[in-house]
Image (cartoon, rainbow over all chains, first blue to last red; front, side):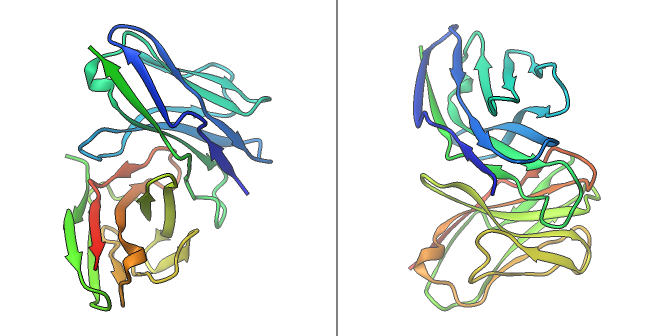
Length: 118
Length: 112
């Protein structure tokens, strides 16, 4: 079974500094997607960044980047130049890529609450 | 605007009183899914649907029903709600061949 582990329940960062959120996952598949979602107090789930496992290049979206280590099954999120609006719960998630029955579940970690200190 | 719309946003009900949470998407997505979010557990899938009239159980289906009579709508039905179904519920959709999900704004359900 696929599992996603976020070992940091809470993290804090000074405004304008950089923070890295950790995520590890367990799978026997070779082809899959990995995601980071942000959930602010409004509780909306917002897609931050996505990585396809077959791509060696780490995904980047403006101030957000990932460090994808496929062999180690690690998928960390780096937030550069942290802003007050980055304060939220962050969820790491995994999904198998093949379009097979039962393959469409998005497995979530338990989340990391990020506080940004002014 | 492309979106997933859930209603209601908040609901307080009593044990055993049937309720329906509606979900509608305007992106012509084939795949729709329901999740519940509980503290310390992340989001867990309840049911999913790969297209009209095609639904299947997720990880925590007990006590829930769904239907997919139209492509855009995917209601979640609690026939006899119990307090352990108090949770935050999310509907999500995506294209069948795509990777990213679009989530609704969530429904906070309290069963007393």
